[in-house]
Image (cartoon, rainbow, N blue to C red; front, top):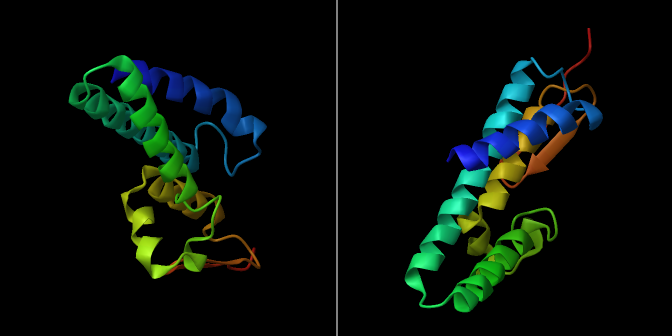
Length: 131
């Protein structure tokens, strides 16, 4: 777990200010971003570990991990709009850690911004005034 959290910590400390996200490195927004990034890294690592233990060779495990990650990215919500998916495959977004991480990061960054109304599935975020 430490080998997943340390790179996430370094990634967040270096890139969070460079991306111009809300607050600074010491803010609550940064803590939520760091937590989301770290948990996502741990979940993806454990998913890959399960695939490795369930297969007989490294090559087969690699192929399955790539295919599963590809589907998770595809249905995660930032390549394909989840509301445009047919009902037969719309359920796939709920088994994707990308979907939950993306939604959490959007909510963390955009919640309470002035003049903004963001609707992601059933989650509605409406901006407030700056005053």
